Length: 337
Image 1 (tube, one colour):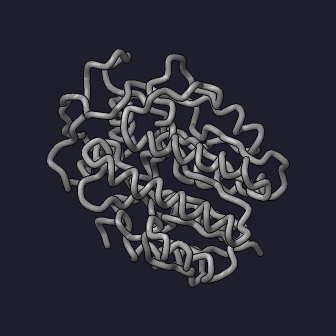
Image 2 (tube, helix red, strand yellow):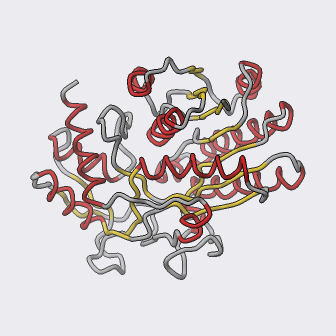
Image 3 (cartoon, one colour):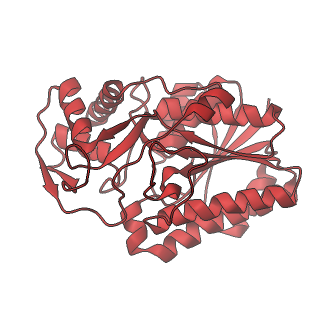
């Protein structure tokens, strides 16, 4: 069976993809620098999959480490998650984001070319669209200037992958432009596990709900949206993980060298709608306060997913209440450990 390198494989999305890959019969090698993940996730994955998974700790922006990865064992394909990913932090520390995100992609692409690895699925982002003029966004929606250095690194990484494929006819790649992953595995064994202050909305919600935080700050209440708060397309992390496996398997059998797909639920929800959903499924009343907008955030975005639905034979199945319930059950499971 094919061996898949999952970079950032102990992170939130990567760990769920590892579970789906093992379920499909693939062998997996995980690389992660543990900068925004924990080694305990490896134990959880071993328990969930019934396997003793191969894991190597290191920084993919370090060329020496990345080159060693390719000689550790044979690699058939790469699913690349490893990156800095906080919009706000990227505004404060742009050079860190350019060094890590672009450097890791450069090293992986050079390693692929040098070691005969022909397949990559890249974790891109809807941030490459900036604030779109028309909604929902399709894959043909023009890229706008991103609102953050994080979004810019995702744009540049897409170009790096596409240009490498043009120059090397043996390499195939897919960029999955996904929206806002939330929720957790149904087992409550893995989920979003931010170190320190969360960067995303839902961990803030669940941590406030369980009492780890006194209040939830809602960034911006004066957007031109129905309730004044920002609108995003939220997708269950398990649905998103399955899309990665579908994209990889399409690569193994398809003829197009490079493709891009929007991966979302195809519907936008405001921050206040997400809060209400959480309160509904958890029975908890959240203490929240609307504060100033956060630098780098856009007003609203959601996806047109018809291309991914057809080409990947995939569709997001889980609705918002189920996403929020799984996130809450994961938070409660963490509190019990």
